[in-house]
Length: 194
Image 1 (cartoon, rainbow, N blue to C red):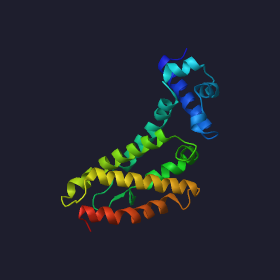
Image 2 (tube, rainbow, N blue to C red):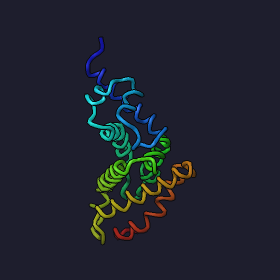
Image 3 (cartoon, helix red, strand yellow):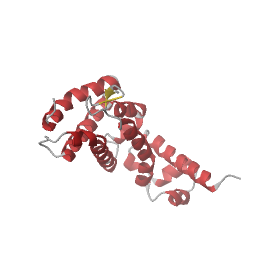
Image 4 (cartoon, helix red, strand yellow):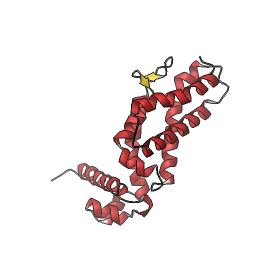
């Protein structure tokens, strides 16, 4: 007999995987709870025992992935703006590349405006937190740090959308360096850094 927590976790994982596979086949808005339950091999009432709706399921799927991504970016060096000798945006490009089929739909016309808003808010908050040491190290900033975080998140998300439309070419590393070349001069200037 399996443990109830293990059964719950397996059911949630089955529902998440069902949603992800459906997302790669059809428009997110067209997916129903019944579709997800059928794909996962569970009853609709089982779905509702775990999730309020498909949007909550979607967030439950993506949130741990985004948190792991944010953690991987957390060691950005204040002096070089590099993380593990690569631009701080590199893990984001690598993450998107690993989940390209999912993001291509969810950040495109077939996706969800709510999802895009969630990702943008997450990226903004993470950017602000990840760059906290930089904000503290610079007292000459002519722009509010939260505005800079909003700018970086928006620019990065739009760059990722462009990259997905171009089949993740060039490489994640080249994109990270390109993004840095585009964004860094303006941000460094408003921070009063060289």
